Each structure stands twice: as C-alpha cells, then as structure tokens.
Image (cartoon, rainbow, N blue to C red; front, side):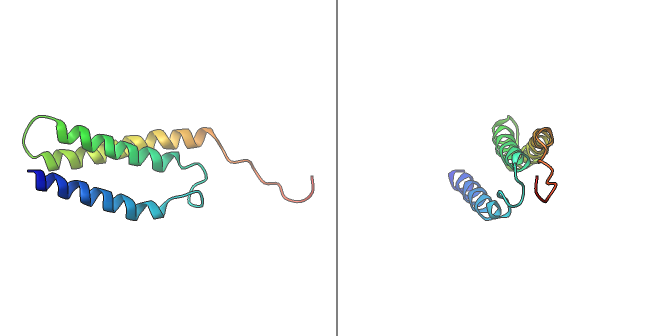
Length: 92
C-alpha cells in the first residue's frame, strides 16, 4: 500500500514538473485558468482518494478530472474579468 501511494506521488510530481514548462507568462499573461486547473486537480485527487469505498486510484483520477474542470472554469472566469489593455499603436 505504501509503495503504491509512493508511486502515485512520484508520477504526479514528475508529470507536474514536466507539464509546468507548457505554461507561463508567455502562454497566458494572467494564468488563472492554468492555476485553477492545477489546484482543482490536486484538490479533487486528494478528496477522491480519501473518500470511502474501493478503487482509490480510480476515485482519485475521477476527482482530479472533475476538480481540474471546475478549477479551470473558475480561473477562466477570473481571467475574463481582467481583460488585457488594447494597444492602439503609434504616438499618444
């Protein structure tokens, strides 16, 4: 059981490290969508893993997917609140 949990933590940490290169200030100036998706995935995985019943890994995966979707939706709403300033160009 401990080895299985250690494998899950190791795979999660490795994938988050690798995928973190896909985001940043250049990809999205505000980044609330990515941050919300990551936070929601982690929270959903933890909640799904700790609920009662069988198949903890499956519940952690499902919880992570649902959490990522909800977190991305909330982050997208926050990003849409703060629109980028429009560049008019030229002298002002």
